[in-house]
Image (cartoon, rainbow, N blue to C red):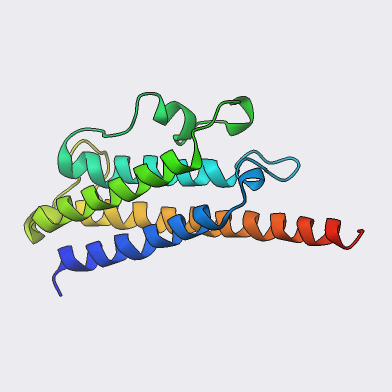
Length: 164
């Protein structure tokens, strides 16, 4: 298996986890965050889209492919508690699926030599492959946060159903 094929498989695996949790989440839970926190399931899913745009799509394709305003709402320095209008789950899911297809296409076309070079437009010494892996690892961590939030919501529902 080539390095490009390995990255494609990793991208499929990580993104499938993000999509699975997003699809399993009840609508009322999408923008719920525990007290004293601000990141909710929908934010984590949108942030995953932003992450892969910055760490994979832009370095490989040359340009951001996010909708206008996405970085402000879902980027590294965004603050979900200050935002009241959120995209639809279906829109986020569609964007995540489309981006995965784009990532797979871009990764299929990249050479091992390109993957070993520093990432275009990014500071530091990390190779392009290292940046892509970092982005996928970060998405996997956010997927874990999504799952934890989902479990907390499910627990709250169970407690409310049992009178407690």
